[in-house]
Image (cartoon, rainbow, N blue to C red; front, side):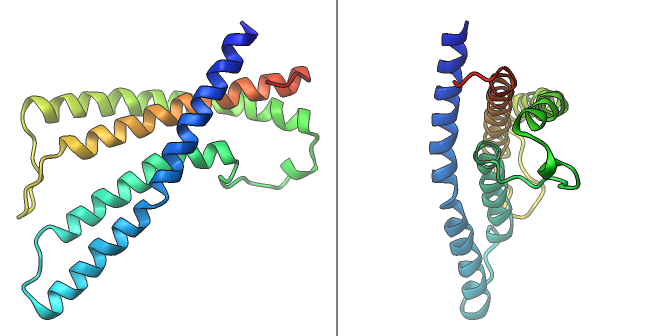
Length: 168
């Protein structure tokens, strides 16, 4: 069992590390879209697609970067008591609270899959003038939420190992 957990943590951490490092460059995609939007409004006709494409790029950047953020511990914590606790106490609290995150992500994934299936079945499009298909961004969102859920389980395993005083 310990071997499975160690392998799981290593694989999930490696995948989310790579996806997160690639997603970091999504900010440049977003900058490019917004730059084109500004230039096209001044010198050409305004583009119909830039606002919605910028929103899609931001969603992908945020959703795919979330698991990397969780893995690196760069999420925001309410640090009233946390900083004064020992590593073991932090692991206990983190192991308890991660269940709330996993529940939330499970519900979000369930709804996201349902919405993505609907978008595929009915060729759902946005109601804007550009009218892009919605399934690509919904699929990216589902993948990001799944990666976040897998990373949350990985963090739970790491917390349990810290509580037991074992290294993974």
